[in-house]
Image (tube, rainbow, N blue to C red; front, side, top):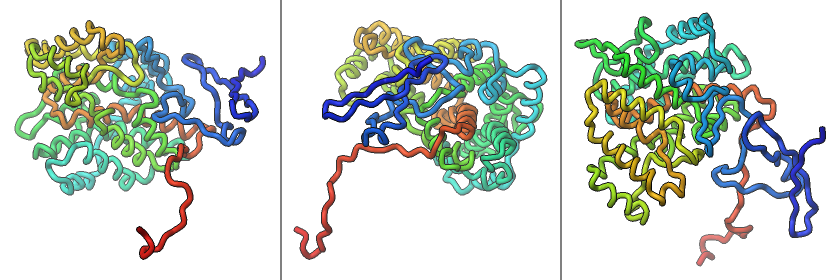
Length: 432
């Protein structure tokens, strides 16, 4: 069978050149332009990588037009309904759902890596109490390589596996410690008798004077949130992890880089922006005026939690988190919650307005997740930190894939230079 080719022709007399067209198992074909510069002396120009595939991957598939999200081929709806987070983590890391014995072994390993080195707790006292949790998380996770340098040989498969176990196990502990430090409460050590998510909630909300008993409904809600955020293809933070990893950096440093990238309000901070927007609207009667401001781009008004860089249909995660939101508010007797009712009213207006429909601005996962976090008594500043806790699984899988990919080289994008051409130096006394 002959190789499929794409021919690039020029209007300036440059000879036409052919490039291979590569097909994946599903999704758009890609044109392999790696030889473009060598053949033509030209680069492609693609700000934001809107039309560029940076790697081959077997982990997560998204069809934004159809509203499809799959981990290793499994629809997110099925995984969120039937799995717990560690089962999905095993799938993302290993490519297959675990059998009973594999699941038990994996859970046991993670459970026995949840404690952090005692000296690590002293790091927190170096931060101000009002430091943003993401600043603390970046520093503490990056410092893990100083404590666990026995597992940072990126060329050794066993070292990579141990680092993965440590990161997945310790992120809930580090995240909970970050919260405890911010509110001035003592750290809680993990309990091996609790599940992964129960342990996280216990370390977040347990105190020496009053123990915390995890609520099954709230635990399940947190399981779903973590599952929905576990991976999302080559987004900004995942690409950051891969770019850092391409230099040979250790996995703890790469995950810390991913956390820094996730911190941006256009990425992991979007659910926080949704709550701020709803607080600004305040009442359903103010929605028409707010929508009018959004359309007219008045005062930088934006409809946060709607639209997505990839999804041009309803974000499949948004449907799941909306259902979860209902369950949590009912369990906590918050059915008349003002924010949730306002969100429903805003969603209805936006979905029926031609302005947003034509632009395919559908609710995304951030639209409801912030309301769930708020109902769980998680402060706004911790939203993105919990996102990082969940996404660590995907980052590790993507990093591992990068390390084992023979096609990968150190990341080095090129540029379209628009600055000054060569100039001769002018001494200070001759400058005008």
